[in-house]
Image 1 (spheres, protein in one colour):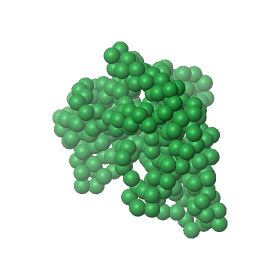
Image 2 (cartoon, rainbow, N blue to C red):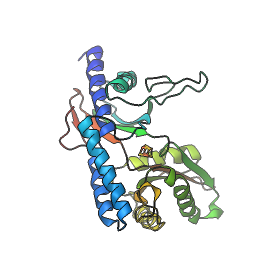
Image 3 (cartoon, rainbow, N blue to C red):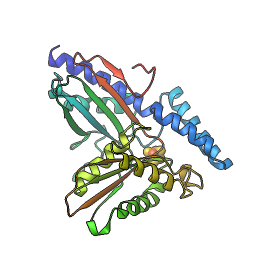
Image 4 (cartoon, protein in one colour):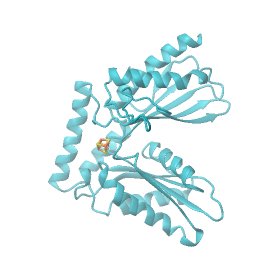
Length: 299
Ligand code: SF4
């Protein structure tokens, strides 16, 4: 396929996929919300969960985004080194976002820092934000589309501790961050924790952590155990859906890590809200595709 033809095809698919992802929660998140609703005891919590589900149903029926804050568009891309269209993807995603802003429709959220004006099509300087991972010996491309809302996962926290602070500093920091940031989002949250060597690498890892599908664990048993303990601990804070009293502040805590410097312990925390609009799609080298996050969905 010629690049121009491929660009038109890919942009059209992504425009529709962005629209779908703004309206429907991924299957794993939807199932988790049902499970947490059943665990709540207070009538108020049940009402809030039922309102969430009612809202999600109406979003599908009316073909409208399931939250008014459709956020900034983030794309996390795993691109096979042999995927033939890597060179056109950035521009195509830019066009797909602008088109989806009208067709979905999406709220216009992007403001230029120095012109101080809304760009009106959800694109702008370095927006959509794209994170690339290149996968060797592979000819596919997997794209995670994320709607990063202003009250949930755009405010995040990061800090570098000294080794003398100990790993207990990580736990304290996560609890403080969730009790501070979490109530401004709409719980139950998916908490992404990045453990790295400086603030920027920890911050990126914390984003990748909350994008991991629910039910997956850190690759190291100790990391997986820390995820479990943090999840259980945060769910004892007494924060429930919409920040009111309840049993489940979080759906899960996910940790992603990298090696650290002997002198640093870097921690970042990001809180993704109940409206975790995280769509995953995989393209083959001929631009045929599989929708991963929504069973039975078509574009
Ligand atoms: S926290 Fe999430 S659900 Fe709540 S308003 Fe923001 S984007 Fe929407």
